[in-house]
Length: 347
Image (cartoon, rainbow, N blue to C red; front, side, top):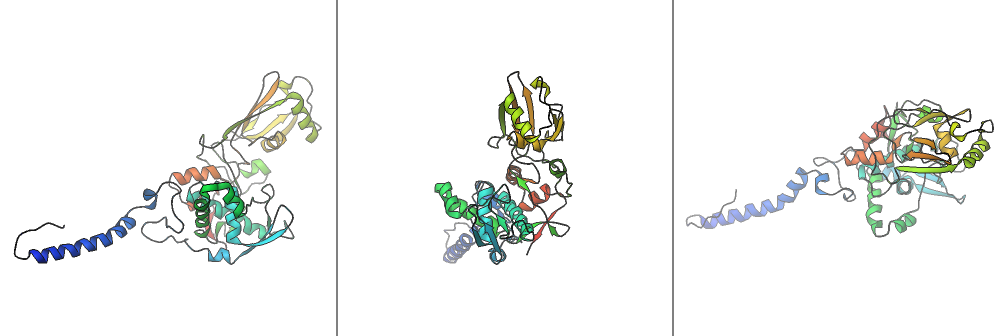
């Protein structure tokens, strides 16, 4: 402890010693503070700068400059039919920017980068697009946006968001989601109504790592609850166009039967005009945001009350962000949503 001493007999030496100690303390103080305080306490959500390590005492085992991704090429089929060759790092930047809000927590963005990298790796070993590895259509493969378009959309936040996504991609360099040592079908969607959906309920095939799990997002999600209102003639026309065997005569209030639901409230199946449809089929038929819905008839129109957005299978993006806000790292997020999987190197 430094002290002030104005007495004679060694006073000069004590002043010099004190000065030296003060200089050393001022030099060492920043390092002591940075090493001893977690980064999440020094910055607000989303304020970590590019290259900062999320571990206060030792470098992150996955932090890198993205060298492996930059050595990997991706052939991207654009919406105009042209094929562009990009580095994996540049391609993933465009996917994360298109698929997840850049305002999300860094750990959520890292989880998204890993999921997108894994999805790309799987498609690169398939023949889905003979002329390319993957396309930029989100209804077929993954969404992608060019950097100039993303930055124009972000406006004054362009630099901050761009660097944030660069960090998420670089600090997960080459990492993906594996099950029994192989890359998975890393499906993701926007938001769940309390739980994700087992793949078997949506596509009829059971997948070991695509099981239903709790998902923590809720009312903070934009348009978390939505409504679709249709008249009886609209419902009849849309249904018969796809399912001509349905009997939609008589009272419209009797057209829909009792729905079978999963633990999250999503519709597994529901009778419509005597034809049993999956919740996903009804969702597509009436352009609902998810298969978690209720339907009521008031004598004049049908009202579909819908919660969440997306097919519900795999990683919920808003759920990932909620987990990140609660302190979960990207590995924890990925292994939560993909049951029994692990995070490891893809190349």
